[in-house]
Image (cartoon, rainbow, N blue to C red; front, side, top):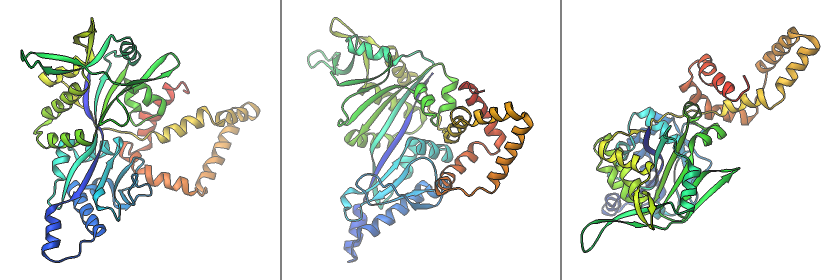
Length: 394
């Protein structure tokens, strides 16, 4: 199975010429921070940020270079809209982390291309400064270490199509690019292709391994798959600007899928090398190319889960020593003593005064848990027990 989607995005909003002209025509003083606040209100209204995420509050971690930042609601993921009070040319930045974007699409029921159209306004111009396009190869038996070895031994390479000036025939030109692999024991689970400073960069990595090691928001999905490898193309600056225009012209989900597939293949099409020249496409590139012609790929399902509480429970049962304490009590005084000790803990929790870190965590995470697990038993049966069984604790 191949799923194509968008992982995260950043927008920059700039005040429109119409607004500037309005101030000039009416001899009004143009005060940037006041105009910026009006633009934020307009953007929030068009995108329904408050209805989807919650009320607007100050964000204590502004994006780098910006001074005034807001977020909406209190969540564990990062969502920020910000401006610099004295530097109008920086515009207003809107940053959706991957989990924030998933949440937005899930709650609103709209796709990214629909979102880009929805937020257009006469008061500002909006274009992407960054967008991450993804291809998820699920149970396709693709191995990141093998890709790295093939790159290192020049068995595969990146090639781009071009037309021969004389014959008009399509040729493939080898694109030498810097690549880095990050070794873990005997495997290379992550490869970066392209430099950090470039306008586009590809990350190939073992998504299943990453989610399991980090107990990420897709942890429960990762457990269901034999293997899961992600190709993640990061497109910035001019490339992101071009993709803004392309997304504006997308009319349906199939065109959206094709745009993602075409962009990834154009920039990161891998072919086998035979005698120093391009041979056939690699299996993974061919899978992406197939999406362009027959539209078999599905857009990535925007479903995220906060697994922070699961990590805490795993620590209590597997690493904190709590089970050792309970076992010692049982061996010395019997199982009734354990029950009495747990009753003692229950009464202790009833009267416990949490610190500010605990209260902050609840503000940020409680609603996310209730959204996915309205009842504790839902959490227990669908998340906690499967996770503890998978980790060998139960």
